[in-house]
Image (cartoon, rainbow, N blue to C red; front, side, top):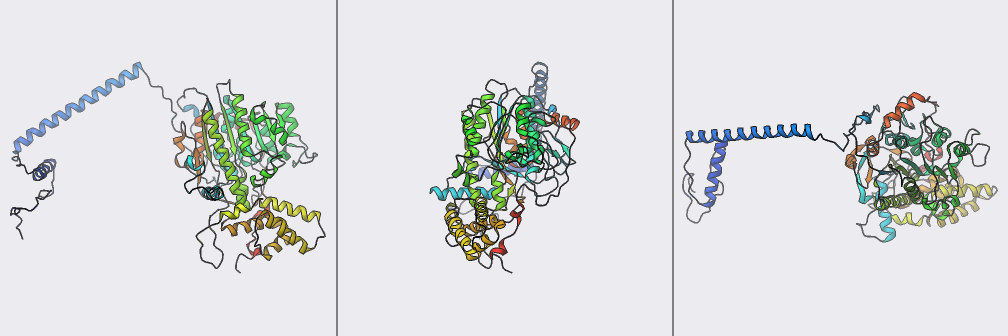
Length: 612
């Protein structure tokens, strides 16, 4: 073995790194590097410089660095002085608005404090997939691949425009409702569950739609639910609680303190606009909202498929226009497609609204703001009906694509942003039966076999029982099995306990039908309400959209909407608080979410799916 000081024998490789102790200063490091370089190349090592030589060299280097730094500083001062006196900066991008405290709903800085934008015409389309969580996308993507025999890398249009995620809590709960969720978008404020355009303390907050109208934009709302439901209501009305739908209808047509803020409304909810002495009305008073809208505020009105078709997909529209195509909600898409001669689809209404607003603004310096909601994704989640939900998400995806195509073909700058207010149902593409091992699979073919929603089947069952009050139990069970379960759900292996439960408990039928589909597809649900899971954000991209990349609070989405349109929402808020007297109707929150209370009844025990 060689001694530490012996030279390497002939044929041995010279080490790449020279021996030596760790360097303690810059000169040691330089010397070590020279040693390593000499070892690698086999060249003689230069003599070690004397201390005096090193000192002189370091002084020269220090002097050079000092002079160079001073020169850079002087040059920067000269350039800054020249720019400030001859060419002052004109910023085009706004200072980001910092959200207030999510727990208290404290306000954003005043929009007037932001630097001015270059004036440009623009359109903003905001889409809300009510109740759609990430699992809904997985469910729908797999279903679509199965139905159309597509490869595993074939995705939804939404998947291709994924932008980020949103946190959804309200000011008074970790789990938001649709009202607080929509207020976060419309007002960019956190508020309490049930709030319609209100901050905590029942203080009205201006909305981006109202500010857009004030600034000269055209505005629109398109939904598949009642147009007085929480999401559309939060953009065009201000009430203490969401179930004040009669008042919401009045404000939406222009009877609020701001006057008319909406130019186009398409959806359901006709019953809230008809006086209670009229067939099909659900108002608590005898006020004819349609008549007031027509005579006082100039609204045009259509209320059926023929009226919708007369609009020629937006080419024959005079604003303002109110289109109410269902007494309450437009049917689920799984059912509506069989009633296409009665009800328009979400995508049809969206295309009509886009074209109508484009035509109305073609000679304007301003564009439009349009909110489109896939409303009934949420309802399918409340019912826990996967067959209905998957068709709702597909229709929403189709609508999203139609908006993208509109933006691409338009000569006006446009941006599309889409997100959900919350997730509904606690959906999971997995279900484990009691007393069995986990099964690593689920079955989209079960959803394909179903051609009707649990809601529609429940309606058929109740109508049949009313029409046949003395029918024997066995005859009723046979009809349920053959006409509803086998023919419409495609279930051929229904259990006697399931059929008997349907015949004996018609008020619980909606839950029972949904459960029958879900367990066979191995789809799980944790609730008939909402969950606190983060939801996805999607976008076409465009100016300012990087602000909502990644994981953001839902009020930051609302902040983007006002910034992109460059509108003063705070001015609207001040006006509302000066003029408005809030009529707070105290009511019990429990079970009041715009849905039948029987949806919340547990039926697992009734069907024998749980163990005692």
